[in-house]
Length: 302
Image (cartoon, rainbow, N blue to C red):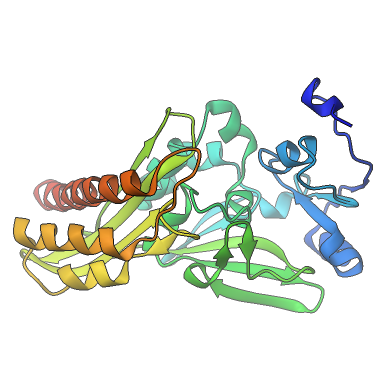
């Protein structure tokens, strides 16, 4: 029974394996087997859970061979990313680096090179970890995701996608196929910061910020955090403190305090709730100032 604790190369569970080549074929399998199916994209989370017998799927659906799920496209005012696009492809993409630098920084912060070469953007989101490094930047970018099933497709705002740890709004017969990211307004300053036990660990807390100024007045402000609530979250109350106001140290400190009150951290194996609340103040302060500096750098260089 505990053979997987001795040799982790072994999957100690019997399952039926599917490797479709098209989205419609994958949707047909999901339509037939529904909740009994587990989707394999990168496998960095799924395979670990199977080896530890935390889950015992009857069917595994491997979407790695579906080429239509791997793309990064620069469209008019929007960047489209296929759900099976690897994190290393995000890091290496000039489109992402130039137009969505906050996502580039976050992807670069995920795990190791090996993890980034296996993990996918869709798998990261569907795993629904509160500590996801990709979710906060995607939230401040006002991202939506597209789900596909045999009965059709629907577009879901990312802020409504997460229900709780490991839970999303996806139905059993739906497959995440695309991440739709609006290009931020010209002159937007963005930043991503993370605190973890080691550089390859999940975050104790992370934050993403996007701001745009008119003079020194904040005209756009979005702040999102991970690992400080049951899901990655936008800090709407904190944003309101800054929106429409002069970007001053006093306003930053008010925002920092509001952020520490808006989050709902817990104590777990990585950190304590008290530490997360305190370090969140530091992260929000630094991320806001970093985003502000980038706005000013852009004004000078522009």
